[in-house]
Length: 202
Image (cartoon, rainbow, N blue to C red; front, top):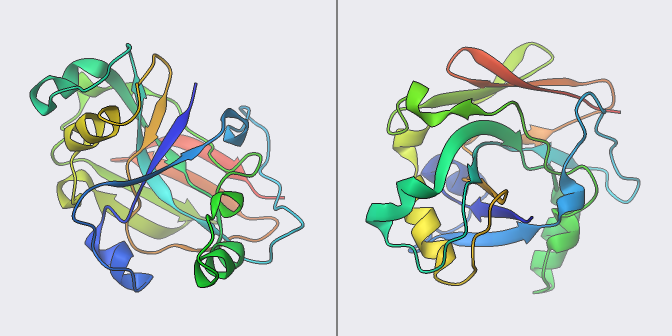
């Protein structure tokens, strides 16, 4: 099982980090150890002083696929949820400044918690709102209609490089509003008004 993450897939987020807009999907991988067990808190690693939350829509791949045409991509997933792509922003920036890979800023233990999955047929994937509350205040809000690359675009593109397998997760990008988390924070993730994710920060 692997976790595939899409970067800079919302214009407002790319702008807030002063990144150029991509002309094709930008993806990176997180290991399975980034998953967080249910009801387990997220522990801020001791090597960073600036961990940011990034709420994202997450799909789960249903079957093996390679070189998937966009028109068939919808056949490869049936569930969706929200997840948090935790990012050690200080480590990431240092790596970027040195022209180095920045996996260690994204791939530490617990850095990709996901919520309860819901069937995609119950929602409108082309106009799907999602959000994150930190200590009961909304800090991020996005809508799938504002993605630069759609879910089907992403599946087709990624599968041209990497075989997708049953159980793989794809994080589809975060909207604007990323910010630091601190010990004691409570993070709640929503699709529409349904809470699917709760993470306590320690």
